[in-house]
Length: 451
Ligand code: 4AZ
Image (cartoon, rainbow, N blue to C red; front, side, top):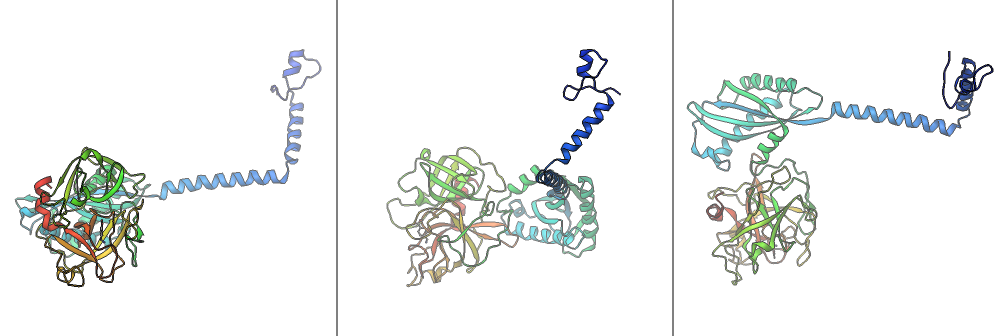
């Protein structure tokens, strides 16, 4: 056996000088191996330990990566559609914000939850959301987005089969006040982009649920997390935060008229989105500012404190940035309803704005109580509403103006109840926050934006 290498070849008797320098007999090869073996044996213990640890860490990383790829869960979206035969179509189903749409959607979503929560897919089922209710000669055609969490390794065909089987079997088995025509049920898998788009284009949906407890206020309160209040916008004058605002479509925001006191030139205003002022998730130029025509610039009262802002280019809706629902003009939010106010406003009266969005839970206070002599003594008109606590502490403050006061309905859809407007300082006893009442200006908002 002859082997050759430039490093370990040795010259042997009887060969040409060239052969001597390049050929290695089996004997010298064996010697070389023995030498190497001695070299390895001569390795110091700490070097061996380093090699062993490196090999173990490498293996652990590879095993971890494989496990992550196989066991990592991913959201899967489906569109389920079916015909409901015992409900007559009502033109109010055309708009997602009507009470009629909400009531029927709630029944459908409760039914779908019952279907999956009582099945072996209960841990995989996340939510269902009715996206449209369409007319049909035999009733109402419902289209529902279903969201599940499945391990990435599970094949799409297999998971679609499981969802479809449970839907068909259990819709027949459970008792519900809706008659579903079984022959019309179709289930289509949506890719992530399509599923996200469908949900992000629905108003008032929050993908991440809040779990905070206790008392908090924007003055010293709790930080908001990404995607918790996706409709929140910051309105900025010459690049500096001035007011909050709410996204009501991809090109329109609603805010307070007093934010534009003195400066109405749209070229000096921008809007930013995402929970941080710096850096924002998105930023847009302003095309047009429409302040309520009856808002008096020079009069120091707070009537007609509403404005809409048109953006120069549309917002790209994502789960972090999208619209809130506007209530119908006729909707009544009962006194004592729990709401949330959010903003980058001051932590205390006359303080500075903060960089990360804050949130606080407040309750609607009746106008009757709010107009009492010791509270606002009759200053609260039909276009305003009070929210907070008579004990004080939890409140909006300067810089929160124009921002949203929102309430989640029984489907978990968020509606704009009020616009931060005014108050006697911040968090004082008997001086709750005063908000522009959105239902009162609902038709005005529609007349300016078409929304
Ligand atoms: C303001 O000046 C302001 N406490 C906003 C809200 C409240 C008070 C003042 C409510 O922008």
